[in-house]
Image (cartoon, helix red, strand yellow):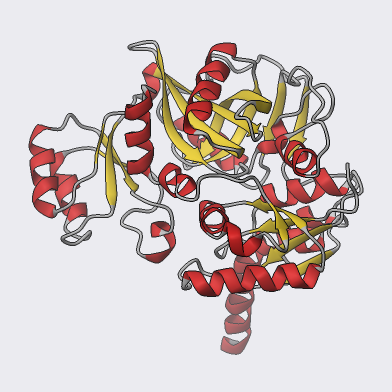
Length: 409
């Protein structure tokens, strides 16, 4: 690694409990790379990692004007004082970087990509259009422009369907739905649609039933020539909310067919940089269907390493600093667990759809090793801060109850 080139974790929005940022700080920091991170305050888990050189406190909501976000990122660059590798952790940050490459060049290193591409890929409608254009299977989708179009869709649709916000930034500014929303029938759809106004910012997608599907993930880093310098595949065992949210537990499982499909699509797009893809294998027609394309680091990226110890964040730093990226087979059979959400996800999977003890078909019977999202023996404070921030609302409620009880006596 070139230890003279720092890394900067870039985020837009208020989500202090983000294990992906902590993972990136540790991944490069353990190799001696100076790490900086944009944080909400000085007491987020990322801000207290032993591998962080300095937190750059800059609270954002994602609703700020683009010029203000750009100015804040440039201030961070001047504060670091030397070119740093940018590592975005959300779609908003990835789009901001792509659309302002000329202004950011003085202070930062980042993969050069067509400026409009990350926004299209982060958009559910844009992604579906690109999948159709390049012959990549994806769920049948509709992007209604008016309430009347929602009504016409409801008359002919086969329910259940899934509703998602159409574009990046919408989830923070004026989200029509919160995350992926499963809609059981026409009446429920119309009730929800009346809240969306005359210009619904949603995409309505075909629902791929759990009983006939399996969730897969692809993480990769693509270099300037469109070739994958690191590419990994895995099975999502549990997510929160169930079957539609953030990964709670996953396993590294080699899948050459899916890897080839993803690599071919990325090369056709001409995308460079880190990607995090969600696929669902539909056993009804034997196709892998692309659900989400995140043009940035995925929160669970530390599940994946090759035999040379390279993950996608290390691959990007090596490539952007002119180093060769060592090749190697992926570390198969490893498990990744997010401690603050997997216990409740595990309980939901046992009680919910899929039957008691539901298990993704390709989940290994026994993990060869486990990577925890938060807890690390050499860096314990992020896990402690995560727990403290989770428990704080409950502690405040208990204190109010106890204070009121004492006042009453």
